Image (cartoon, rainbow, N blue to C red; front, side):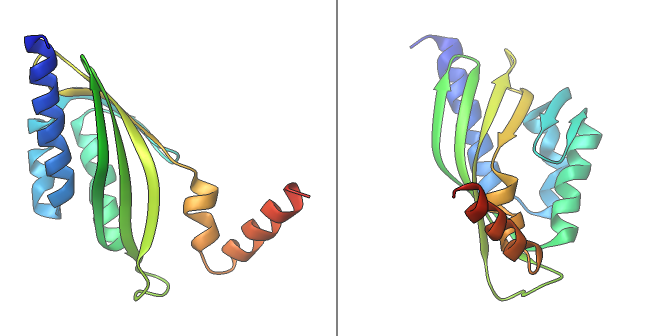
Length: 149
């Protein structure tokens, strides 16, 4: 294992631990893990720069009850990594008792300092989110059944 690979593995391990403990007060520490001009993309957002990434995570805490990430696997190959995760939360506007789980993964590219320059999340918004919403969920499940016939 090369030194760079070892450094990247350590950076990814620190980032995974950070996500596992993430709370609103930690958002000021994103610069410890992300390059200033990092890019972030998920099914709903595509932004560049720490302030924009911070805003996405900040919105998560205002829109959802108890959001948290559980990183279940991490693969590191040089400056690239892939995290497999579960995102657990409760809806604020609907049933706040039932915990929801979205399963997905993140492709990360790190610079030579171990900072994330690209963060791309992959998850199925229809299956993992829309089907869980009251009203819309019934429609999405019906559409999936129709498409599978």
